Length: 567
View (tube, one colour):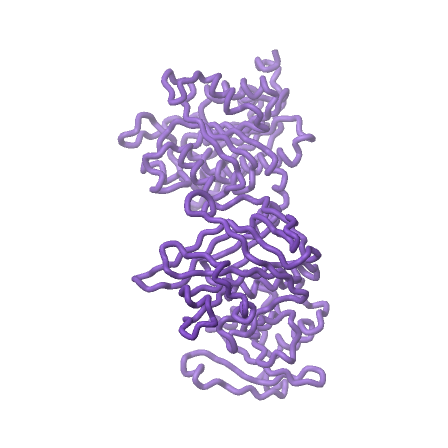
């Protein structure tokens, strides 16, 4: 209040809000020759977090840096570090209001796509997918969109809570019926299989940016106005297991997609109600309810836009043998980072005790590890083509009725990289033999029995191999040493009901190996034409007071003169 007095501004305190324990101030702030009407709301976390400043008269402010829904001003970026707890509201306004008005040097370099405001006003359970790579503002309009969709009503305790509408734009047609854009991204699991329908809907182009009207004046945020005179029973659809009907209309409009970069966006307005609501000429027609369907960008480039360094993974294929405690997280990381194709091989079943250090929980109990992983990846990361083979290397019986070499021939054919997560030296020797005969790089990862450390290795054709690494441990321990506890099998344990001993360790420690292996895979594909040497990354946990700290060491691995790989 002292800061306001020094600025010669007298704010009015909202006494009702104050009685509820919240401070709200209304005032007019001097700016050049104007007095801007504002409202400040202090959160109970003030001054750790900033007050919210609202413009109460939109005629005083341009469209940038102002929410069209409630007038909230974007004086600072969302990063809380931009707010100093020593500031007052008058100081914040002195420093930022002019820049927000005129785009000065202190303006936060953040774009303001209009779809953000529409999405804030939409329900959380519905969406329509578009692709940012489309450029359609010059297309002949109006036209039609071909959608894949599912539509149902959420019913909670017998009361309809509203529509759930999920869709993806598969094709954009112009006014002449010509295809001007098509979907090239992955289709989410919700829009695959039974229950998914297709329909055509109309789309229109607007020459100016579409923004919602303030909530205080229009509870349908302007979507009702956009739907006027467009209700057409012939163009609608029925909601699954419901008597209600819906109709969708799409609008293409220009908007700022990134800071000072113009682009385009889509607005999808859904009207729903009883069937007679679509006949507005009838006197007895019931109410038609308009709502906004959230616009989500899900093209291939959209999925990697936050991590452009992994863009090359989409064209690569990987075979992963061994989907245990370190292989399974690596499989999920590979799919999360957009690997084009992933082939999995294992034979083991998920037991309840496994899930303490396995990435999937009780829903996977009793299932084959590779199949449970493949189903999860197909559902959650549809951009990755995933397959699996159930086989135990070295076993005389197999679900595949194939020998080891035949199975390896099938899973390794045409891949760009092999990953060995078996943590078995005999299996590693066999897999490296196959990698070497195909001139393929091999990533091997395993932990020491006590998980005091571990190894992630990249073995390149013609360079050091797994046996060369063991020679190096013996001959050059000062240069390349084995991870702590590597040969201490006394740390192995046998859980009740398990047929063999296993290492003891936690998932959060083992995951260090999986994540480092993902870095190695991504780095290899980024520099594959410039890599010829093998590398070894050795993990040793350190630390005091019971808090373990991972420490990594990198070594180049040259071929050992006594190793058979040189013969």
